[in-house]
Amino acid sequence: MFQLCEIILHLQEELQGERKEKSFFKLERDKIQAVLQTFKNNLEEAERQLKNKRRERAEAEERHRLEISVYKQKKKHVLSEQQNTISEEKMDAVSLSLLLQNQNIESDLRLLKENQDLQGEEAPGGQLHKAAETEKPD
Image (tube, rainbow, N blue to C red):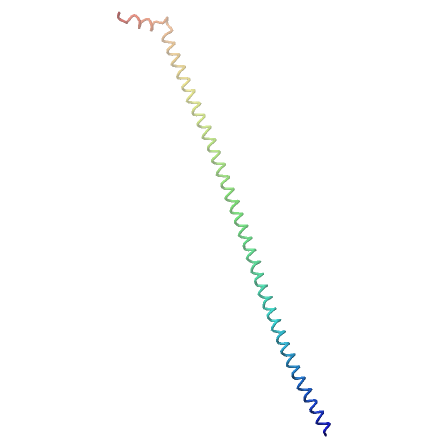
């Protein structure tokens, strides 16, 4: 019976040791699970941040493409306006040149006519000039 009591005592000690070991391993398991859960949470947060950064980058790229498109449209519009202005200036210069040319031609014609009129008055032997001299009282 003494041996039986010793065996029981030994088994109880062994049981208590197993319980302590089981408790230790439970604590270790809980610590590992807590660390694992923290890593999972950190990973999920990092994935969310990465996803947000990718979305923000895609949105920024789209805004950039739109800005470039608007810039190109504005540039095209400005170049078109510039071309129109240049064409108008050329047309104004040509019109002014033609107007000045016409005025010069009219002036030349008027001067030629006046010259011909003056030559026509002087042509019959210079009578106009002589008549003016004879009318002068001495």
